[in-house]
Image (cartoon, rainbow, N blue to C red; front, side, top):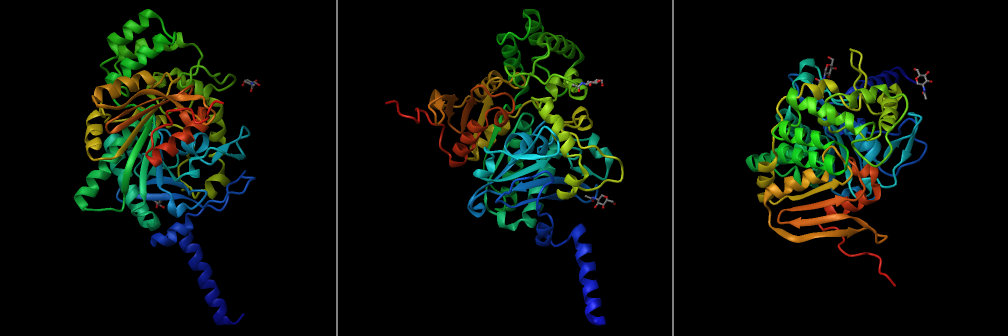
Length: 468
Ligand SMILES: *[C@@H]1O[C@H](CO)[C@@H](O)[C@H](O)[C@H]1NC(C)=O
Ligand SMILES: *[C@@H]1O[C@H](CO)[C@@H](O)[C@H](O)[C@H]1NC(C)=O
C-alpha cells in the first residue's frame, strides 16, 4: 500500500470510528441504529430492526430509547404502530417487546430468546419507546429529571421524540400512524394523541399522520376506575364486605397515583385479604419461589398504584437478567453511563416521585372523538388492577350513543373471544380470560384485535366457523 493510500485508509478508519458513536446526519444515524442480531437469538428474522436514542431536550440532556421492529412483509405498505407501557415508570421493552406484542421474547435462562408467533409486526411496523426519562434505557443527564416526571412533560417529550425520530426515519413521514398501550399508558396514549393533533393544527404539519389509538386495561378516570375496581374485587370474592365498604368510603374520590394515608391503610388490608394471588391475572398461578424483589414491590402500597407491572414475576426476572447483559446492551446501542446503572422493568425512582396525574381523561376523549380519530378501548376481563368493570363505568360516563349493542365476538375456532359494544366514536372490546396484559395472556386474540383495529372493522359478531 502506498503512503497516500495508507493515509487515506487511516482517514477512512478514523472517519468510520468517529461517526459510529453518533452522527449529526439523521440518515446516517438510521444506518448506525440498525441492529444486526441479538445475543441468544438462534433463529433468523426477515425484518429489519433499529434501536438507539433520540434527544428530546438538549439543555437537560434528555434522551429517549426506542426499538423499531419493522413488519415481516412489505414494511413500506404497513402502518407504524407505537406501543407504550405504563407504571408510571415501566419499560415498553420489558413488557410490550419482551412478553406481549414484540417478536422477541426472553427464555427462562435469561440469556436466550424465542420467536413470538403472534407478534404484532405481522401487521405493522412496531415502535417501542421507553418513556419518560429514567424508565428502561431512557435517561437524562440532569439526574433530578428522573425525580420530576409527570404526565405533561411525558407528553411533550414523546411528541418531540416522534418529530426528531421522523427526521431520522423519513420513510415513515406521512405514514398511517397509530398509538397503542395499556395500564397507565391510558394517560400517555390520549395525552400524546392530543399533543399531536394540536401540533398538526398549529404547524399545519402532516409528518405525524395520526389515524387513531387503542388502549387496554387503561387508567382513564380515577373515580369510575376506583368504583369498578372495588366492585370487581368484591364480586370476584377477593375481599371482605367490610373492606369493600371502607374502600368505597375512603378511596373512591382519591387520585389513583397519589392516594391518602387513610385509603392506603384500607388498601393494605384488602391486599392481605387477596393472599398470594396475582392481581394482574386472578385465575392463573402466581410465581412461587424466591422472588423477594418482585414480591417486595407487590407488597408495597403501589400494588394498586404501580399499574404497569407484569403478571408473572418469574418472566419479569428473566428479562431483568437479559437486558442487563453487557453484550445485549451493546447490540442495542445502549448508552453507557458513567454512574452505575441497573436496568429495571419498572423504576420506583420514577413511579414513586410522579408529579402531575390528572384525575380524568374524559375531556381528552371527547376532544379526540370530535377530531375524528379511530378510538378503541379493550379490556382483559380477569384483571383486578384496572378491571373490566372500571372501563365499563368509565365509558358509560362518556355518554356516547350506541351504534351496535353489546354482543359476543368470536375467534376463528368459533369460540367466544369476548364481548363488544360499538359507540359513536369509540369501540369497546373485552377479551375473555385475559388479565392486565392482554397480549401476554391471550396472544392469538390480541393479534385478532390489532388486525381488526388497523382495518377499522369491528370484531367478528358471528361465528366464523359454520356449523354443519
Ligand atoms: C449526556 O452526557 C454524556 C457525557 O457527557 C454525553 O456523551 C451524551 O451525549 C449526553 N446525552 C445527551 C442526551 O445530551
Ligand atoms: C431460595 O433461597 C434460599 C436462600 O437464599 C436458597 O438456599 C434456596 O436454594 C433458594 N431456592 C430456590 C428454589 O432457588
